[in-house]
Image 1: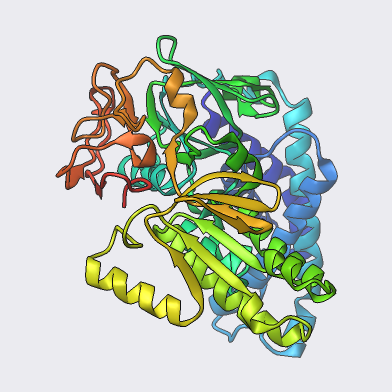
Image 2: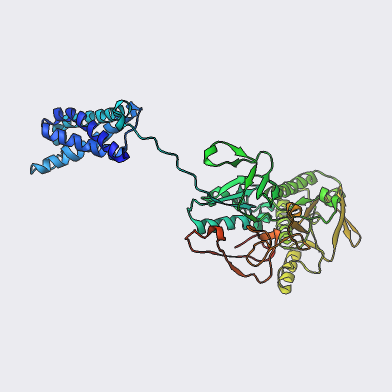
Length: 488
């Protein structure tokens, strides 16, 4: 039997049985039966009575009786008799017996409807619904929760909308998008960590976010292996179950870059990296700790080594961090009366003849002059060649006594890519074509710092792969530039 026919029959019968209460309350048998049956029919079609839960069903329908009393007894019946609705206190008092009748009618209707579901004839019982087949879905997996990965996910959400045939998954080592250009402000105390991070799940509405570390990529089997503990939801048929492997049809590599020490393990052991929120907070804590220790240190030489902060690398990250730490440290002097001003020293070591190679020469020179005037020391055409506890070794030959070395001098694409049979440039980035596709690997894409994007790619339309041509939403557009952390 059709579901709606069954619900209509069930509601009509329950309303007819319950109308006996309404007849006594209204004092009109014809009106009571007509209203009771009509309301029962509407209740059956609109609410869809279910088995069990008699008390809940009765209370819900009783609340419906209050609304019906106001609509019928207070408004419609007086209007039908040529009178004003019973809005006054006296009018309400006169219709109070009808209110009791409607409430009892509603409770009886809900109770009887539930009972009919349990004990009614076989033809009134619900027909078992066949399970809805789960449609085959195209699985797009994005590795990396930085600018490139998150922007890609946002664009794909716009392109495919709520299309159930496309499943979007993003794998990230953290659960928040970090605005890395402002890490220096966190290290320098002018911003807090929460000010430059945004939870991924609040931005990605239909993308499944998996927090975990990628340990392997099988390009032939099209599977991603994650670190133990990463929880990959299985299909709805296996609700509550999880796995540590993730299958894909299209893979977007947006893993970013990691610090590169060019084989200097001693420097790696002594330096603080500057890539994450934890790094920025560690640097700020290190500066505070050095000031605390220096404030009670009687030896000026030891104090100077504690208050010397060396930053390797004069690009955007290093220059911004040097300026931020310089302002932060000199601002702290007011609270440490035992520390002379000239003992605080921020040293920026850079291998080229000018800082900020990303900028024009005049602008970079202006930045250097302004920072030097504020107390930052620059060592240009100089490299860090080694480090040991309390000492940084430079080339040309020089030693800096310091307890704080921050490394921003070099990066390399994510080391996971080295294990893949993909063409890479000398830097280690995966070579992609102007559409960001990896040549020779159907369904694999690369972008951001882990990819070697051709110069002049410019604005690239986001086109649906052949397997996704059924999507009807218009294409969006993204831009990608070599060396950037993804699309903008």
